[in-house]
Length: 65
Image (cartoon, rainbow, N blue to C red; front, top):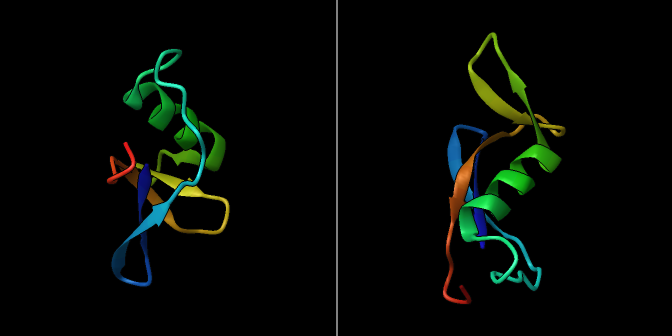
C-alpha cells in the first residue's frame, strides 16, 4: 500500500511496508487507520495534515496488494 502525500508543491507516493491482513480489515479500513494515525484534520484548510507538515491525500494499492 502506498499513501499519497502533498509536499513542496508535488504529490508523492510513500510505500508503507507492512504485512496487512485483509481478512481482518479491507483496504479502505486500513487506509482510514493509517490516516488517523499519521495525520490530524485541519478545519481551516479542509485537509488532513501529517505531523511533519505534509498533507495526507489518500491511499493507493501497489503491486504487492
